[in-house]
Length: 154
Image (cartoon, rainbow, N blue to C red; front, side, top):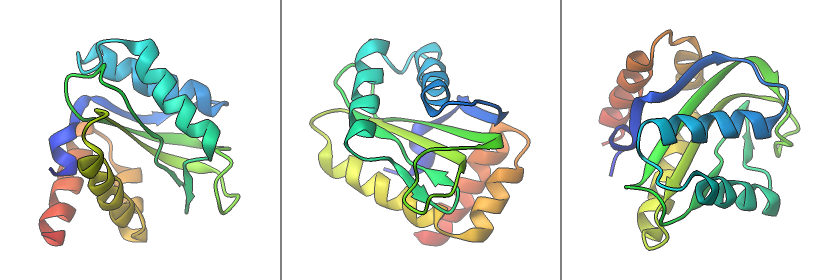
């Protein structure tokens, strides 16, 4: 499964502003609910927030990868957000976040979930890619950037 398989334009939020990470995560979940990908918003929210309580998903370099698993989704889904103002995410490198990629998978798809987490992390570790997606002006541009990078990765 590729990253572009789980991203829909309706769940790509660009140049947003939030003062709390919880509000940013709620907005991403709401976008997935509106797109019809989540059948029980409270369960998806609980999965993501419970995982965040274990340890911050602020990976570093201005990027966070919140994720969770629940069976209250239609399929593995992703949401993407850029922030116009950096947001404190208690990241491992203590730097604020400007890019968030949320991944929600079904409870019985651990392998797929881990592969997608790894793939997203690898892409977001590239400075040039982070710069490109940060500058994207439309959801379609974001998807095209992910598609091009995934093509390069193989």
